[in-house]
Image 1 (tube, rainbow, N blue to C red):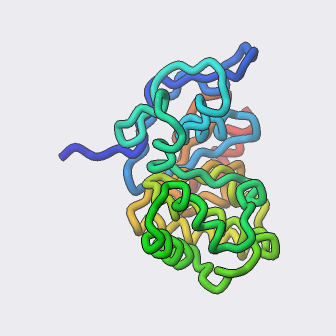
Image 2 (cartoon, one colour; image 1 turned 90 degrees about the vertical axis):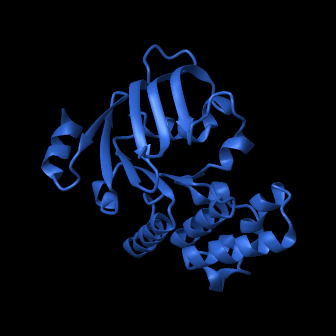
Length: 240
């Protein structure tokens, strides 16, 4: 039986503007449906750029020299517009404040489905479900600015979930959170996996990747699969 791949990347290379070097260099990769797939690496190694290629931010928002193919459930990302891609891929950024702009948590979560022109009843169902998955029901009528960093990140996740994407990308979403908040986000990630979602995590901290099924290390635009339990090997990769 053919296994469905959520993401297929073929010989992907990318460089920004006038840069001489590729920040992603001839990467080929298969990400399975329903797995938690993680990319570890230092700042500037290309891991966020990889997220942008999968989510369509490249080439729709950021331009540069792009070679190769990225397919999301067999749909080519290059040549598809952001609204079409957002039905399949949602992305949560490191800075949740940059994603939150509505006066209440409920309004924040409703924003995406309203833009899809869904019926009010359907929007209500999506709000309820997103709040439940993230454990944020009690904050429904709160102003997002009054919440903690971890709670804001959960609202950002809930607002992405309301679009019902099959793939959710976490771009260093745990980096500014305390241990309790990280635990809540990881619990939510595992809930999403149980729902059949595909999770892509990008991190610079190995301690945030204990929920991962597979971990790859990114350096100079290349990916190397690693065993997340061998921290010493990762230290060597960082320093080499």
